[in-house]
Length: 128
Image (cartoon, rainbow, N blue to C red):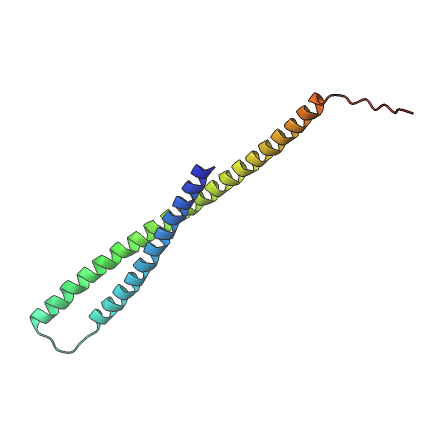
């Protein structure tokens, strides 16, 4: 029973880590979207080197944003899988607890039945 509880806790911790990663990555994705928008604005006349730098950094940010979006998609699938596994583990632990409780009740009942059978029959005699 402890083993199952430990596994359940580990799965819950893993799920929490995935959700935390997803939150941080979605924040990064939003920041990259803002940076790409800012980079694409026309800043008036610029030198050739400034235009090259703007294009280079724009491509880099777009590439990083695509990576972040792919990772977010992956994390979404992983979170669904982890939630499913966690629910299955909780159900399994609940079934094990119910089985253990039933076995304890049955053991107590068997002990009471045995004690009743082994008890010597008492004759009640009245002396007048």
